[in-house]
Image (cartoon, rainbow, N blue to C red; front, side, top):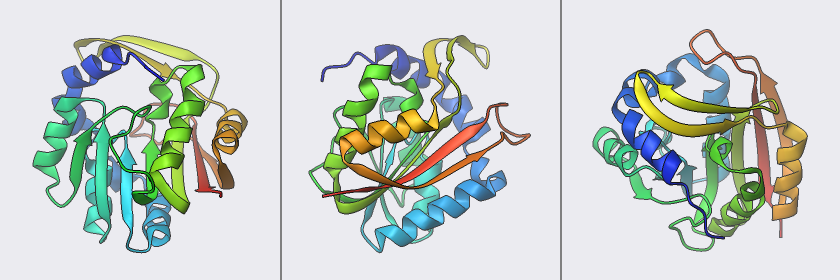
Length: 211
């Protein structure tokens, strides 16, 4: 599937430096996210972990700091540049969720934290199929997203001119796309936004590649 994600790419290139400054330390106040990431480390069992939509690499860096072999992948070249600078223990690649720069079965586990929210509705299924491709049989996947049905268009972000859509998603719909792509959803979690976050309700799905 050919996708044009130039708007998303350009927007994240534009805000990359400020994103790092504002978001780069967010795991410090996210105990639920840290707990789920520990599950990912345990499930990987020493195998490589992909951080899909890694931004400036803070999640990849956290995972690498807990002994995981991590490859972060992001659409934004500027984000990847910053990630390489800030988190040298992890590796980083530039790539699209619909055409991941990775071999079949390369990863034991993967995380996609708030990255699928920039996909159009018709892109979710092929994106999850691509995630399945790069996971080994039995590979583990953690996906998170903002809960809802709205689409928020942002044309200004922290004083920068951007052009990017945020698609809020429903847990059942995301789980159905995962099942279609060849995953079994093993756990679901929802929580309210924290004071340090945007005021949205959050959803998480833990799934496993089925063969």
